Length: 322
Length: 119
Image (cartoon, rainbow over all chains, first blue to last red):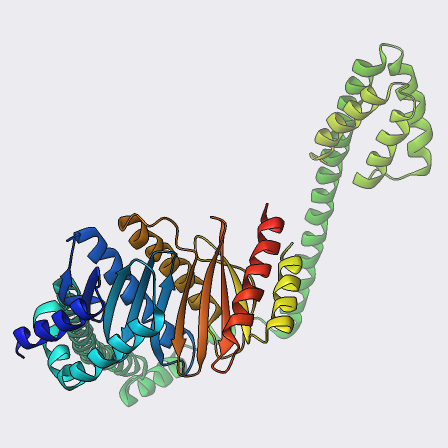
C-alpha cells in the first residue's frame, strides 16, 4: 500500500473543504491524518468516538451505518463509513455545511474504496493492539495447557484405575486360593478315616460299662424337675431382693422430694408431705408417672409461682433416678 | 417514575413517527425505553452515552463548547442522540424516510419535557 497516494488524496479533500482535521480510521485506529493544530488528545478522543460508533451495526440489526454527524454553530464533526471497519473522520470549524462535507467525504470514499483490503492488511500488521495479541496468545496457551493437563490427568486416571483393578484382581485371587486351601484343610481334618471309625465301633463293643452309665429318660426328666424347682426358688429370691431395692430407692426419692418441698415451703412442709404421701399412695401405685403426679399435687400447695416452678424443676431431676 | 418517562417517550413516538426511543443515564444505563425488537436496548444505551460523551470531549478540545446532538445515518434509518442537561441522553430511532425537520423539532420538545421532569 502506497501511503503517499493516500496522503495526497487526504490532502486534496483537506484543502478543498478547508478542514481542521481529516483522518482515516481502521477499526477505530488512526491510519493517517492531516490537521491544522496537532492534538494527540483530540485524535485519541476522535479515534475512540469512531471505534464506539461502529458498534451501532451490532446494536441495531441491519443498520449498516453510512455516516455520523454532529453540528454546532461553528463546527461540524463527520464520520463517513467506507465499510463496517473503515471510516473517514472529518472536523470542520466555522459555519457547518453538511451537504458539502458529505459530498467531499463521498468522493474521498470512492477513491479509497480500492485500498480497502490493503487497509485491513495494514491494520493486522501495524495497528492491531499488541496487548490483544498477547492476551489472545496467552489465552490460547492457557487453553492448550489446560487441555494437555486434562488429557494427562485422564491418562493418569486410566493408568491408576487399570493398575488398581489388576492389583485388586491379584489380591482377590490370592485370597480365594488361601480360603480354598484352608477349607480343604479343615475338611480333611474333620473327616475321620475308615480305620478310626472301625476302631470306635470296637471300643464301644468292648466297653459295656460305659453304656450302662447312661441315664434313662425318666431319670433325666426327674433331674429336670429338680432343676426347674431350684430355678423357681432363686427367681423368687431375686425378685424379693429387687423389690426391696426398688422400695428403698423410692423411699430415698420421696425423702429427696420432701427435702426440696421443705426448702421451698418451710418446716411446715414436712407435715403436708406426710399427709399427702399417705393419702396419695393409698389410691396410686408407686410408678414414675404417679410420683410425677404426686410432685404436681405438692406443688399446688406452694403459693408463689416462681418457687413452684423451681420445686418442679428440682424434683424432676430427682425423678430421673427412678 | 419510569412510567412517567415511558409515557413521555410514547407520546414522542406518536407525534414524531419515530420507531423507538430510549432515555439513558450518563453512565449508560437505560432509564426508560420504547425500542423495536431489532435494537439491543443495553448496547444502544451504553453506546449513546459513550459517543455523546466522547463527542463532547472532542468539541471541548476544539474549544467549541457543548455537543448537544449527534446522529448516525444507516441504510435502514437514523439514530439520533441528544443530551438532556448533563444528566441523561435521549436516543431516538427513526426510519430512513422520516421527516428530519419535524423529528428534530419533536426531539427538542421532548428534551424540554424530560429536563423538567429530571429537574
